[in-house]
Image (cartoon, rainbow, N blue to C red; front, side):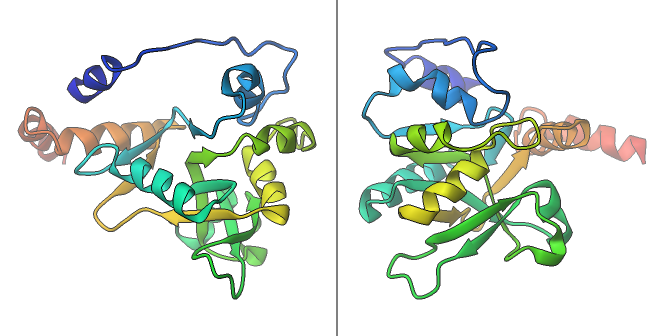
Length: 208
């Protein structure tokens, strides 16, 4: 919370935009809602239910921005290797062979059958994006009732440079999108915090 308050104290222009029924359901729609705010600038797009656990908060996001600037990519996506059977609840990246740019994506498939998944690398809720993604999203069909960001990234990768950058050693990604992962996230962060770790360890030991 202290880190959050420190960041928010530096925010100069905070705006809230409603996502009305005029936009399709899905994790790609907030970008369309924000089109006029984004304008012609590159931007950071974050999923609110994805957390990065790292010793220096913001270091991984900064590295994504650096890669975006250095490679001239149209998008840089957070990525992580997951157990093979879990790609069916996340996504699976196919990397471009013989590319001069490290970890350039050729394609990414949303929630594939593990039997046909091209890799165990998935993308998740940290993106550095050029405003090109807006036009791509507008031309991305709504599938299974949602406008999927993964589908738009896949379409962008067909024509432009898109990079998938994995978390470094010692850092981790936690999704809080279901009750078990929400509990895991809370316990993980509490155990890393000296103010709470002793009490939480005692509670866990007592429960055993």
